[in-house]
Image 1 (cartoon, rainbow, N blue to C red):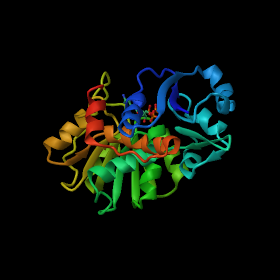
Image 2 (image 1 turned 90 degrees about the horizontal axis):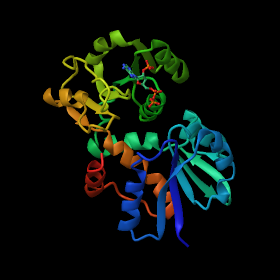
Image 3 (image 1 turned 180 degrees about the vertical axis):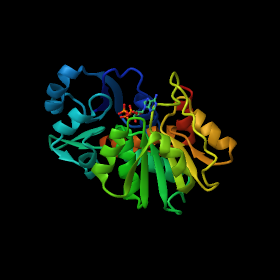
Length: 274
Ligand code: ATR
Protein backbone atom coordinates (compact mmCIF):
# COMPACT_ATOMS: atom_id res chain seq x y z
CA UNK A 1 0.00 0.00 0.00
CA UNK A 2 1.27 3.47 -0.88
CA UNK A 3 2.67 5.19 2.19
CA UNK A 4 1.54 8.80 2.40
CA UNK A 5 3.20 11.69 4.22
CA UNK A 6 2.73 15.45 3.99
CA UNK A 7 3.77 18.82 5.34
CA UNK A 8 1.11 20.53 7.46
CA UNK A 9 1.10 24.32 7.73
CA UNK A 10 -0.90 27.47 7.13
CA UNK A 11 -0.11 28.74 4.58
CA UNK A 12 1.89 25.87 3.16
CA UNK A 13 1.96 26.33 -0.64
CA UNK A 14 5.50 27.79 -0.52
CA UNK A 15 6.98 24.71 1.19
CA UNK A 16 9.88 22.99 -0.56
CA UNK A 17 9.41 19.79 1.44
CA UNK A 18 7.41 18.04 -1.34
CA UNK A 19 10.29 18.67 -3.72
CA UNK A 20 12.83 17.21 -1.28
CA UNK A 21 10.83 14.13 -0.28
CA UNK A 22 9.59 13.62 -3.85
CA UNK A 23 13.21 13.49 -5.03
CA UNK A 24 14.11 10.88 -2.42
CA UNK A 25 10.99 8.77 -3.09
CA UNK A 26 11.85 8.69 -6.77
CA UNK A 27 15.55 8.05 -6.35
CA UNK A 28 14.88 5.13 -3.97
CA UNK A 29 11.99 3.78 -6.05
CA UNK A 30 9.65 3.83 -3.03
CA UNK A 31 5.89 3.43 -3.37
CA UNK A 32 5.06 6.57 -1.42
CA UNK A 33 3.76 10.10 -1.73
CA UNK A 34 4.40 13.41 0.01
CA UNK A 35 1.88 16.25 -0.25
CA UNK A 36 0.89 19.64 1.09
CA UNK A 37 -1.82 19.97 3.72
CA UNK A 38 -3.11 23.41 4.61
CA UNK A 39 -4.83 23.16 8.00
CA UNK A 40 -6.34 26.33 9.49
CA UNK A 41 -5.35 27.20 13.08
CA UNK A 42 -8.93 26.56 14.27
CA UNK A 43 -8.82 22.99 12.92
CA UNK A 44 -5.32 21.86 13.87
CA UNK A 45 -6.02 20.39 17.32
CA UNK A 46 -8.87 18.27 15.95
CA UNK A 47 -6.79 17.16 12.96
CA UNK A 48 -3.82 16.12 15.08
CA UNK A 49 -6.05 14.55 17.73
CA UNK A 50 -7.36 12.20 15.04
CA UNK A 51 -4.12 11.84 13.09
CA UNK A 52 -4.39 8.06 12.91
CA UNK A 53 -7.53 8.49 10.79
CA UNK A 54 -5.82 10.82 8.30
CA UNK A 55 -4.31 8.01 6.23
CA UNK A 56 -0.84 9.52 6.68
CA UNK A 57 2.10 7.54 8.07
CA UNK A 58 3.60 10.79 9.29
CA UNK A 59 4.09 14.45 8.56
CA UNK A 60 6.29 17.48 8.77
CA UNK A 61 4.80 20.39 10.65
CA UNK A 62 5.60 23.99 9.88
CA UNK A 63 4.51 27.47 10.95
CA UNK A 64 2.20 28.06 12.83
CA UNK A 65 1.51 24.49 14.02
CA UNK A 66 4.76 23.35 15.67
CA UNK A 67 3.48 24.04 19.20
CA UNK A 68 0.13 22.33 18.48
CA UNK A 69 2.06 19.28 17.25
CA UNK A 70 4.11 19.35 20.46
CA UNK A 71 0.90 19.29 22.52
CA UNK A 72 -0.67 16.53 20.43
CA UNK A 73 2.25 14.07 20.39
CA UNK A 74 2.06 11.34 23.06
CA UNK A 75 5.78 10.52 22.75
CA UNK A 76 8.47 13.17 22.23
CA UNK A 77 12.19 13.13 21.50
CA UNK A 78 14.43 15.06 23.93
CA UNK A 79 15.00 17.97 21.53
CA UNK A 80 11.26 18.49 21.08
CA UNK A 81 10.85 18.44 24.86
CA UNK A 82 13.61 21.04 25.24
CA UNK A 83 12.14 23.32 22.59
CA UNK A 84 8.40 22.82 23.11
CA UNK A 85 8.00 22.48 19.34
CA UNK A 86 7.61 19.51 16.97
CA UNK A 87 8.30 19.54 13.22
CA UNK A 88 8.16 15.79 12.51
CA UNK A 89 5.32 13.39 13.36
CA UNK A 90 4.89 9.64 12.90
CA UNK A 91 2.65 6.87 14.21
CA UNK A 92 3.84 3.98 16.36
CA UNK A 93 1.18 1.40 17.18
CA UNK A 94 -1.41 4.10 16.54
CA UNK A 95 0.25 6.53 18.96
CA UNK A 96 1.33 9.92 17.65
CA UNK A 97 5.08 10.55 18.17
CA UNK A 98 6.91 13.81 17.62
CA UNK A 99 10.47 15.02 17.15
CA UNK A 100 12.20 18.27 16.40
CA UNK A 101 14.74 17.83 13.60
CA UNK A 102 15.57 21.52 13.05
CA UNK A 103 18.51 21.26 15.47
CA UNK A 104 19.76 18.15 13.66
CA UNK A 105 19.43 20.09 10.38
CA UNK A 106 21.48 22.99 11.65
CA UNK A 107 24.26 20.81 13.09
CA UNK A 108 24.36 18.35 10.18
CA UNK A 109 24.65 21.26 7.73
CA UNK A 110 27.73 22.55 9.55
CA UNK A 111 29.14 19.02 9.91
CA UNK A 112 28.77 18.41 6.16
CA UNK A 113 30.24 21.74 5.09
CA UNK A 114 33.00 22.11 7.70
CA UNK A 115 33.60 18.75 9.42
CA UNK A 116 36.03 20.29 11.91
CA UNK A 117 33.85 23.21 12.93
CA UNK A 118 33.73 22.14 16.58
CA UNK A 119 37.52 21.72 16.71
CA UNK A 120 38.15 25.16 18.11
CA UNK A 121 35.38 25.21 20.67
CA UNK A 122 34.99 28.66 22.06
CA UNK A 123 32.46 31.40 21.80
CA UNK A 124 29.60 31.54 19.33
CA UNK A 125 27.55 34.66 18.66
CA UNK A 126 23.90 34.07 17.77
CA UNK A 127 21.97 36.97 16.27
CA UNK A 128 18.26 36.83 17.10
CA UNK A 129 16.27 35.33 19.93
CA UNK A 130 13.19 33.74 18.35
CA UNK A 131 12.21 30.09 17.98
CA UNK A 132 14.97 29.37 15.48
CA UNK A 133 17.62 30.82 17.79
CA UNK A 134 16.35 28.69 20.65
CA UNK A 135 16.90 25.49 18.69
CA UNK A 136 20.31 26.55 17.47
CA UNK A 137 21.50 27.53 20.94
CA UNK A 138 20.32 24.16 22.23
CA UNK A 139 22.31 22.47 19.48
CA UNK A 140 25.47 24.48 20.08
CA UNK A 141 25.41 23.77 23.80
CA UNK A 142 24.88 20.07 23.08
CA UNK A 143 28.12 20.12 21.04
CA UNK A 144 30.05 21.54 23.97
CA UNK A 145 30.58 25.18 23.02
CA UNK A 146 31.89 27.07 26.01
CA UNK A 147 29.68 30.08 25.59
CA UNK A 148 26.91 31.35 23.34
CA UNK A 149 26.43 35.10 23.17
CA UNK A 150 22.90 36.09 22.13
CA UNK A 151 22.30 39.53 20.66
CA UNK A 152 18.80 40.65 19.81
CA UNK A 153 17.07 43.88 18.82
CA UNK A 154 14.61 43.36 21.67
CA UNK A 155 16.98 42.76 24.56
CA UNK A 156 14.32 41.23 26.82
CA UNK A 157 14.08 38.23 24.45
CA UNK A 158 17.86 37.72 24.63
CA UNK A 159 17.62 37.90 28.42
CA UNK A 160 14.84 35.32 28.40
CA UNK A 161 17.14 33.03 26.41
CA UNK A 162 19.87 33.46 29.03
CA UNK A 163 17.39 32.71 31.83
CA UNK A 164 16.23 29.58 29.99
CA UNK A 165 19.64 28.09 29.21
CA UNK A 166 21.72 29.24 32.18
CA UNK A 167 25.20 30.74 32.55
CA UNK A 168 26.72 29.42 29.28
CA UNK A 169 24.33 31.73 27.40
CA UNK A 170 25.14 35.42 27.67
CA UNK A 171 22.57 37.98 26.51
CA UNK A 172 23.98 41.21 25.11
CA UNK A 173 22.39 44.37 23.77
CA UNK A 174 22.38 44.55 19.96
CA UNK A 175 24.63 47.63 20.07
CA UNK A 176 27.16 45.76 22.24
CA UNK A 177 27.39 42.83 19.83
CA UNK A 178 30.30 44.17 17.70
CA UNK A 179 32.52 44.13 20.78
CA UNK A 180 31.89 40.38 21.19
CA UNK A 181 32.95 39.51 17.65
CA UNK A 182 36.69 39.48 18.44
CA UNK A 183 36.35 36.33 20.55
CA UNK A 184 33.79 34.68 18.29
CA UNK A 185 34.56 31.40 16.44
CA UNK A 186 31.09 30.94 14.98
CA UNK A 187 28.63 33.67 13.97
CA UNK A 188 25.05 32.58 13.28
CA UNK A 189 22.27 34.77 11.91
CA UNK A 190 18.81 33.56 12.92
CA UNK A 191 17.00 36.85 12.26
CA UNK A 192 15.04 37.54 9.11
CA UNK A 193 17.45 40.33 8.17
CA UNK A 194 19.00 39.63 4.77
CA UNK A 195 16.02 37.60 3.59
CA UNK A 196 14.60 38.59 0.21
CA UNK A 197 12.35 41.63 0.79
CA UNK A 198 13.91 42.41 4.19
CA UNK A 199 16.64 44.91 5.01
CA UNK A 200 20.18 43.48 4.93
CA UNK A 201 21.99 42.50 8.09
CA UNK A 202 24.60 45.21 7.97
CA UNK A 203 27.38 44.61 10.48
CA UNK A 204 31.10 45.21 10.44
CA UNK A 205 32.74 41.79 10.47
CA UNK A 206 36.33 43.08 10.60
CA UNK A 207 36.77 42.25 14.33
CA UNK A 208 36.20 38.54 13.58
CA UNK A 209 39.20 36.22 13.70
CA UNK A 210 40.26 34.82 10.27
CA UNK A 211 39.42 31.37 11.71
CA UNK A 212 35.78 32.32 12.36
CA UNK A 213 32.96 30.58 10.53
CA UNK A 214 29.87 32.56 9.48
CA UNK A 215 26.50 30.91 8.82
CA UNK A 216 23.00 32.13 8.08
CA UNK A 217 19.73 30.25 8.38
CA UNK A 218 18.25 32.49 5.68
CA UNK A 219 18.55 30.75 2.28
CA UNK A 220 16.61 33.12 0.00
CA UNK A 221 18.86 34.51 -1.34
CA UNK A 222 21.39 31.72 -0.96
CA UNK A 223 24.23 34.20 -0.48
CA UNK A 224 22.84 36.75 1.95
CA UNK A 225 24.51 40.16 2.38
CA UNK A 226 26.03 38.79 5.62
CA UNK A 227 27.61 35.82 3.83
CA UNK A 228 28.77 38.02 0.96
CA UNK A 229 30.53 40.38 3.39
CA UNK A 230 32.12 37.44 5.21
CA UNK A 231 33.35 35.89 1.94
CA UNK A 232 34.76 39.21 0.75
CA UNK A 233 36.75 39.22 3.96
CA UNK A 234 38.10 35.73 3.28
CA UNK A 235 36.07 34.05 6.03
CA UNK A 236 34.59 30.57 5.72
CA UNK A 237 30.82 30.57 5.29
CA UNK A 238 28.00 28.00 5.31
CA UNK A 239 24.68 28.90 3.67
CA UNK A 240 21.29 27.98 5.13
CA UNK A 241 19.97 25.72 2.40
CA UNK A 242 21.66 22.64 3.85
CA UNK A 243 19.76 23.09 7.12
CA UNK A 244 16.48 22.78 5.23
CA UNK A 245 17.69 19.66 3.42
CA UNK A 246 19.20 17.94 6.46
CA UNK A 247 16.20 18.56 8.74
CA UNK A 248 14.14 16.48 6.31
CA UNK A 249 16.33 13.35 6.63
CA UNK A 250 15.05 11.85 9.93
CA UNK A 251 11.37 12.14 8.92
CA UNK A 252 11.90 10.41 5.58
CA UNK A 253 13.76 7.59 7.31
CA UNK A 254 10.93 7.12 9.84
CA UNK A 255 8.15 7.07 7.26
CA UNK A 256 9.77 5.21 4.39
CA UNK A 257 12.48 3.11 6.07
CA UNK A 258 15.49 4.43 4.15
CA UNK A 259 17.97 7.01 5.40
CA UNK A 260 18.30 9.40 2.42
CA UNK A 261 21.38 11.37 1.40
CA UNK A 262 21.63 15.13 0.95
CA UNK A 263 23.23 15.04 -2.49
CA UNK A 264 24.50 17.92 -4.61
CA UNK A 265 21.84 16.94 -7.15
CA UNK A 266 19.11 17.51 -4.54
CA UNK A 267 20.67 20.83 -3.57
CA UNK A 268 20.66 21.95 -7.21
CA UNK A 269 17.05 20.87 -7.61
CA UNK A 270 15.86 22.91 -4.63
CA UNK A 271 18.09 25.85 -5.56
CA UNK A 272 16.45 26.02 -8.99
CA UNK A 273 13.07 26.35 -7.23
CA UNK A 274 14.03 29.19 -4.86
P1 ATR B 1 11.79 32.61 14.36
O1 ATR B 1 10.93 31.68 15.16
O2 ATR B 1 11.87 32.26 12.91
O3 ATR B 1 13.13 32.79 14.97
P2 ATR B 1 10.75 35.13 15.40
O4 ATR B 1 10.40 34.56 16.73
O5 ATR B 1 9.76 36.04 14.75
O6 ATR B 1 11.00 34.00 14.32
O7 ATR B 1 12.17 35.86 15.50
C1 ATR B 1 12.68 36.64 14.48
C2 ATR B 1 14.01 37.22 14.94
O8 ATR B 1 14.44 38.17 13.96
C3 ATR B 1 13.91 37.99 16.25
O9 ATR B 1 15.13 37.83 16.94
C4 ATR B 1 13.71 39.42 15.76
O10 ATR B 1 14.11 40.40 16.71
P3 ATR B 1 13.03 40.93 17.80
O11 ATR B 1 12.97 39.88 18.87
O12 ATR B 1 13.59 42.20 18.28
O13 ATR B 1 11.72 41.09 17.06
C5 ATR B 1 14.64 39.43 14.58
N1 ATR B 1 14.33 40.53 13.65
C6 ATR B 1 13.33 40.57 12.76
N2 ATR B 1 13.36 41.74 12.06
C7 ATR B 1 14.41 42.44 12.55
C8 ATR B 1 14.98 43.74 12.26
N3 ATR B 1 14.44 44.52 11.31
N4 ATR B 1 16.07 44.12 12.95
C9 ATR B 1 16.61 43.32 13.91
N5 ATR B 1 16.13 42.09 14.23
C10 ATR B 1 15.04 41.66 13.57
